Length: 144
Image (cartoon, rainbow, N blue to C red; front, top):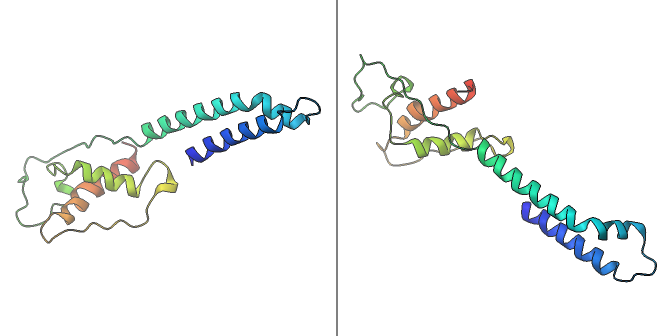
């Protein structure tokens, strides 16, 4: 979309220059377009860069906070980690951020209604969702 807007601005500038190459009788809209095409392209370019920087800061990953009850054992054995085990569930931060970014992005138009977590049996899919994704979504919804 950004590139399309830049190309459109450049094409308008070229069209204005071409259409107004004759200096005798030039309609006022084409004269206005010729005079303002370069500044308008520069302003649009600056707005596009500013918008990309703003989106980058909106979508930057949030650090994952960990809390843990020390009376619990840190490893649930063969059972999947649960939300209560989120304090000791680690090593999957990149996957958690990716899932949160897909399900709850800062730009609602980029949200996915469904994300499949697939992998071999015992690879930690349930733990990733229960102890990683659910607490992260809850923290994001709470604003922290």
